[in-house]
Length: 626
Ligand code: ASP
Image (cartoon, rainbow, N blue to C red):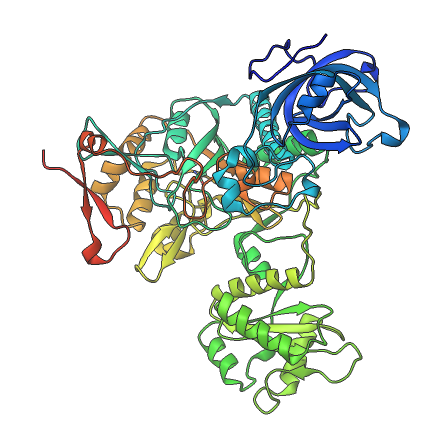
C-alpha cells in the first residue's frame, strides 16, 4: 500500500505544515511534515519521534499496524536524520498532552516515511530539549556552528535580531530617515582602533581600510543635503579582543542635519520604546535620565554606570583631612581624593575575606594600591578599622563613617589616590561588591535602566605618548561655552558628546559635530595632526565644509549589544550567526588563512620572515619592487 524507501529523493509532496503548526483544529487531516529527528523513543514496539524544524517540534508516532515497513524503517532513524513523513493528525490521550509544547495536544500517526538524509554521530548533542542536554564546550560549538545553530535558544536569538532590523527600519522610515549604503572599501576613519586594511591590486602599495564606522561619509551626506541618514552597517576594528568585543560588528548608524542633543535623545528614546514594546511587550518610560560625565565618574566611578543598584561612591576627603595618616595626607597633598563605598550587610566579614578582597581584587584585578576598611558589626559592637588607631585616629574614622551614613552591619571600603583613577578603581570595586551581594539581576526581563551620559571631555591626555587623543572622535564639537577653552585649556574642554547606557553597558555613542573649518583645524592641531596631514587624510571633509555644511550630529548604536541585552544572551557570540573567537578567528571555516602565492603577487605583496626579531606576527607584508 504505502511506499517506504531510502533514496534521499523526496517522493513526498511539499510539506503541508511546519513542525510548529499543528493544533487540535487539524485533527483528522492528512499532513506532510519535514524536519530533523530531534529525539527517538521506542516504547514497546511503538516508535515516537520528535520532529524538529525552526518552527517547533511535533510528535510523530510509528506503529507497526499502521505501516509495518515505515515502522521498520523508523527503527533505523538516528538523531539529526532529515526525514519527510506523511500521516494523520490525532488528538493525544489526555495523559499524554504536553502543555509545554504549542503542538503538545496532538501527534501525527505516520503512514509513510522517507529518509531524506542521514547524519553521522554528532560531535555533541543537539536538541530542542535544551534543558536535557549539557552545553558542549564553545570551541567545539563554534567549529560545528551549523549544529550549534540548530539549538532553539540560538535560533531565537537570530530571530530576535531579525525582528530588531525590521522594527528599526520601520521606525526610521516613519521619521523620514533614508537608508543609504556607504562604501565598505574606504579611507581610514579614526575611531581609535587599528584598521583592517585591504591591499589594492590596481594601485600597488595602496590600501583601502574597512570602515571602523561610516563617520566621514555620513557627515558628507549631511553636506549633500540628505538631512536624515540611517544605515544598519558592518564596522571593523582591529582591537585586542575582550569578552564583549567582536572585530566586526553591526551598528545602527544615524546622522541628522540641524540636530541638537535633545533631538538625538528624543529620536533614540523613541526607537528604544518601539524595540522594547514590539520585541518584549515592555513599556519603557521616557525621557531617560541624563547625567554629566563628571558626575557619573564621581558617583559611580564609570562612564557607563549600572543603575540597577545603588552603592554610590562617596567623597570622604574632607572628613579624613589632617588625620596624620601618611597615605591619606600624601594623596590629598597631591590633589587626590579619598573615596568610600558603603556595603550593607557585610560589617561582620572575617579577616580572611577582607584579605582576599584586598589582595586578589583591589590590588591584583583592579590595580589599586591597597584597601582600607571600617567594619560596623551587626550586633552594634565596636567598629573595627583596618588601620590601627595610633596611625589613623578613631575620631577621623568616625567622622568618615558619619559622612557616608554607615550604620551597624555595614562595611565601609576606602580607597585613596589620584583623580580620576581612584574613582574608576572604586567603580570597579562597586561592581565587584554588587556581584558579591547578588545585586545584579541575571535575566532578560529587566529592570531596564537606561541613562544618557553627557558632556564627555573633548580630549583625553595620554601620559605615555604625551599627547591628546579625541575621547569620542576628532569630528566631535566642543560645547559652545567651551569654544575658547579649546584654545586656552584644551584638556578642560567639554564636548557635545553623549553615550546611551543600559544596565551598565554602553549601547551607543555619538555627538554633535564640528561643521566649521576653523574649529575642525584646531581640533586636528590639538591631536597633533598638522595642516598637511589633515589635508591628506580628511581634505575631502574639510573641502565639503567650505560649501555650506549644515550643523549636524548623530549617533551609532551597537546592534549586537542591543540584541544581547534583549535576549539575555551571555555573550555577543550568541547573537551573531558566525562570530569570531577571542583570538579573532572564525573556526568553522578556518579564517583567517594563508593565501596562494599568486594572489599575493597580484597584490604586490611579499611575506618577509621576521622571526629573527622575535616579534609577533612572524611575517610582514611589504610592497614588492615593481
Ligand atoms: N562614528 C561613531 C562611532 O562609531 C558614532 C557617532 O559619532 O555617530 O562610535
